[in-house]
Image 1 (cartoon, one colour):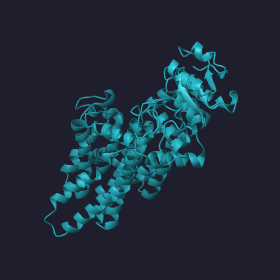
Image 2: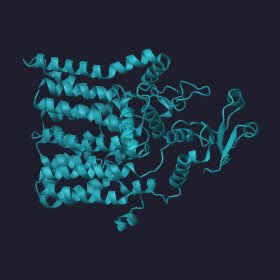
Image 3: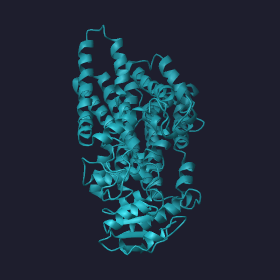
Image 4: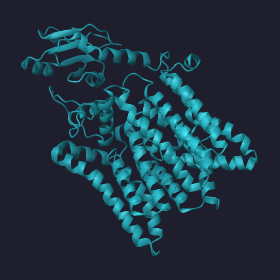
Length: 518
């Protein structure tokens, strides 16, 4: 695999080579109508590809991965008390989600999953990404199944799953490069899973499919928040349209059952946090509700914000296939059925909500319905191939070309290339290795470290359980607290404008770490 590593100067490129090879084999099998083998091969290709992405960067990313990672690591010991800092040595602002003590800025399910992964595989920047590897791979199977139920066409279903497998933005969320990272991967998974369960319910309207949809929706709510109820939007609209049918009462009872089970999953945590951490919980509930009416933290944009980034979600040059496929799916009689209308409704509701209603605009928000968009792209591709009358011969090259376009490997190579001086990869790796080695240079009884780069205090605490870290030096007020408690300190050497003040440097309980940070 040395040739692959030379071609793509990234970590563990042999995994990438294996994933690409397996994906091509799966495409060939799909073209030969070996559907079970094709989707199985694609699942393992997706797993290998996501494992490759999880191991690309041996450091924690700035926004927001490092914060999620630290809270998850602390939850290994305190699963019912999410904390940014376990020790509250110095005063903190409970409204500052980057720097507080009890951390309720996100719902806990994805943090529990990350904590469990690190409990099993050890604490590292890689192991906390492993749940996303598994969930992202399973999502391939769900998209395949949804598309089969919608179109009764295995090739269309395989192509939709293929696009999901190589979704550039999803893969970069998993790698931690894009903000919201593992939180959105987990959230998108549970929303998709709830929609899959509902599509199964439309095929066979039994109570257990309705119950599963409700539980999965609750899991989505317990990962992020209200958009986790998306499954009930199209479900409710379809239910209203069929109220005069004799089976409407049964379906209404199933709908209510799903809602109740969703609440059973996510409400206990809300009640618990409001009772146990009332100040923090009330603040976060208010703060989160403002995303609908305000552009929070400068995340603003026009109604065209998400459309302008369709190329990021659906591939340069080919994202126009999505509206084409959506129109064809609704217009052509062979596709027109309740399941397809439900999926179209979910996609359009998501687009309308995030574009026209929610005032806070963030790339990752729209990812919750992006996999559904791949279904309509696959429909458009299949219709174009059918018109060409060369479907048998063009299927393989078209599938490969579209998957590679959505994958956007040149961008992945650029932002993760260790030799690229503009992506700070080398600096971040060097500093991460320095943080991992801190314990070698300080006495065992020293628990407080200062003078690293802004927000690198989060990294230091993640890699060194039990240490309390603070970026920059201590100001006079902070130092007076430390001195009054006779607390031993250790500090990194002065570097890049970060220096220890003379007052702190002359402190009798001060030890300097002999490492130069970048």
